[in-house]
Length: 240
Image 1 (cartoon, one colour):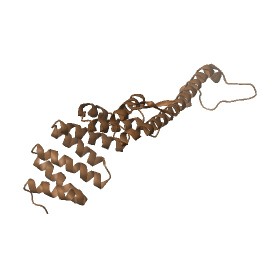
Image 2 (cartoon, rainbow, N blue to C red; image 1 turned 135 degrees about the vertical axis):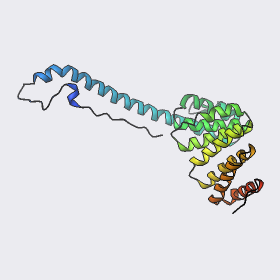
Image 3 (cartoon, one colour; image 1 turned 90 degrees about the vertical axis):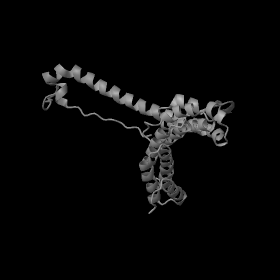
Image 4 (cartoon, one colour; image 1 turned 60 degrees about the vertical axis):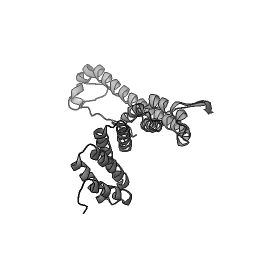
């Protein structure tokens, strides 16, 4: 995640320096002498602010790197389907003297970083695999306000799965549709529109379901186009 540095512009009139400062030999204008202490204080504040910003940015970069390393170490367990260790870590496995920490701890320690947000997505997925939809939803919600569009898409899709598991079809449809609208990949758009349409169909919202089924057909993704046409047939709609 990119760090944004803010810069501030100061009007020198505001700190007591008026017009040009006449310097002749050791002569300093009475105006500058009068305001010298104030000027130095303000310069000091600006310097401290700049130092603080640099430290903050370096700290963020350090946390991002630490989160990335921790995530890479635990992913082996996730990819192998060992979701318990993926979530909780492996204290018996040391890498460079450090135990492998789990996705939950990565989120706790580095949740404000982009890699921490990604860890929350993986934690949610692991919990879905364990059918713990309630806890999974908590992790997916963490990414809804992310600056990363990919994280927001995955968070909405994950949350939709959790809601569908509880037969909350209206909420599920809305989150699937949000995921589709945010995605730039036609295949993902078609996939999420299909899931959204099917949930709208379940709650009897035929108008919304039809609209999304037709959107899928426009995307021309064969895998989902057939399903969309079947959906329109179930709704008794004409397929153009």
